[in-house]
Length: 94
Image 1 (cartoon, helix red, strand yellow):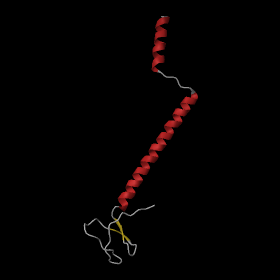
Image 2 (cartoon, helix red, strand yellow):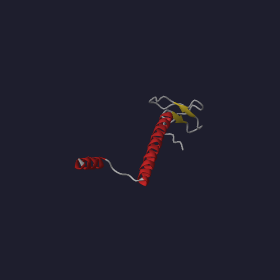
Image 3 (cartoon, helix red, strand yellow):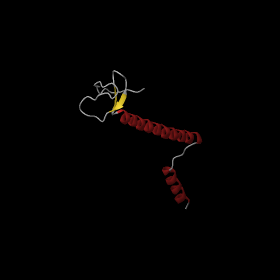
Image 4 (tube, one colour):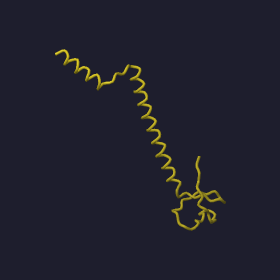
């Protein structure tokens, strides 16, 4: 009877791992920080993608610095303010 109880206890001890309090706190803190880091990374990825989509059709005139949207015709667009032909250069935002 006692040997059976010992065998069951040993079997349970093999399936379970022991953590002390400080190890549990480190694991909990690491898990929370990793969740926050992943959420921040995901938010920045989505934000940069939305900014890229917003600037995709934006064109800036080199003469009068007027910014306007052009749907992407193959020919050079004309500036609505001054009428100059505008190249489709990538607009960078800081």
